[in-house]
Length: 287
Image 1: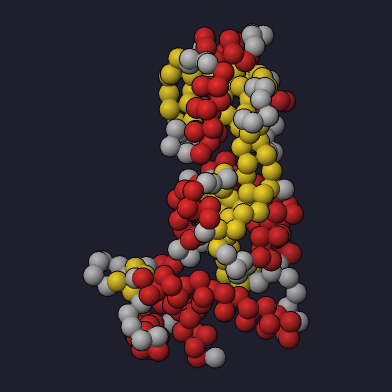
Image 2: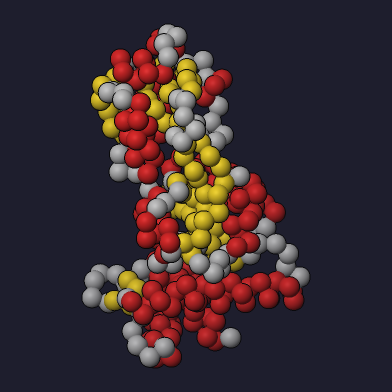
């Protein structure tokens, strides 16, 4: 049991990057947490943290231990729940989401916590690639992202949630012009090129041979939509799940034909699925 306590403290220090912050969250003194980390390092035969900077960061050995510690503690929590009568989701989890999915995730977590009060969730937002890195190195248990490719995808499990087709958004002042005319003639509000969604938009425009009049490049779909409402320009973005743009009197939603131009959104987690229970619950509510 003492080893489990050491592992919980280890994860808290890894999350906070500080002995003082971890001690405060654990209700212990900083000296006690420091002694715990030294004991754990002795047990595992070497340093687990890089102490050369201002804070504490996991070194290679620590990054290797982290997912195993999470898996072991998750299994223990499940076993304990069965014996003491706890039903449902329990324990501490950290979940990330791209900005456009954070609202939906926050609503789901609110619902889950009402039914599972012993579930302690920390939410993080970021770009898909950044969130994937945090899942791989154990800083996040799971994340809702746009489908990834390359080496990151090969290192993660993927659970699809939904598909979002690209649409053209214009203000009501744009009149009844079709998608191609709107994109070619009005100032173009572009979503961040450095993201998978931005790359999808680039491919869609190139495939149609549409040359847009670049106006602003932004990294928030919600901000872009608000500018469209103000008739600043037009945009090409995914039709976000849960968005009620069609009923917005200040917006025109024009389909951008082409089944290949869709955004796939899903949940990523490390191989082994240490919190598959949480992933299933999120998928059921968001899918």
